[in-house]
Image (cartoon, rainbow, N blue to C red; front, top):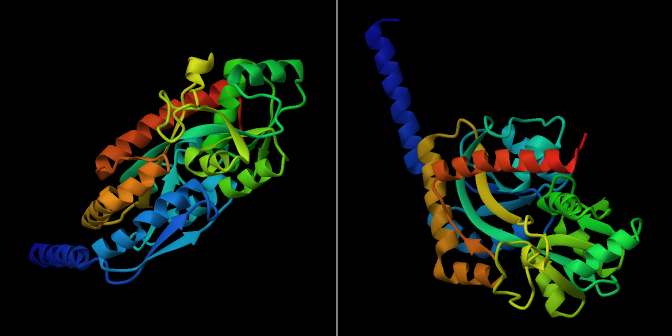
Length: 320
């Protein structure tokens, strides 16, 4: 093939890619959710769905693929065609899993194209009404006096709720048994049934049960109190100054997705999450709306990989 022919072929391919990106999307988009319906990821996705579909001009289908701390859905995305028609909502667990799991079926950074970080969310240390502690100091005192009594639920191995519990154990010296569930919804149900002593859950889900008087709020995990529960102190101000944990939520596409397609998805997602009605609804559920560029989200993931690696190593937590 001559130089002219090769140049012409390259130009044609480039124009085809450009045209594809300009027309994207021409079919429905699948948004993988790595946890069951009813959890914090679901509560973020649903309010913005109508606005997102309007921005893209196509339907967006939520596909729930729960299990293994979100790694099942993440593995599916890594194998998906890089055309923008399959994307994934990831949580902070995405960065945690890189250090928590001894082996993953994907590379946490190389196999994905960051699209946008949508929101952050503190956790709520909630407990069944029967748990014999109402404050962090009382919980620590009870745990030390009864080292085999406390259990904590999580939304699955490697989830932020899991590692938050491990970090709490390290920071306080309190022994607790970890009980994993397949998502926040089932874990909260377990708390309501008195199957576990407590849980570090996304404030968006557990605060509903707290307001209904079915669970009690012991503390929030952010660096400041939540406007949702202003009377509930932080773990930090309750005598554990080193303990601050915030969850985050973002969208990934498969590596190799055309940059123009990623940019179009990012712009649509950011408009959807910042829509005044959507943003108000999310704020009422405890989320802090963000909306970033793909580059900014990639940098955030890089920083989180380092942070959670240190946290996992310090806690000794590991999933085979």
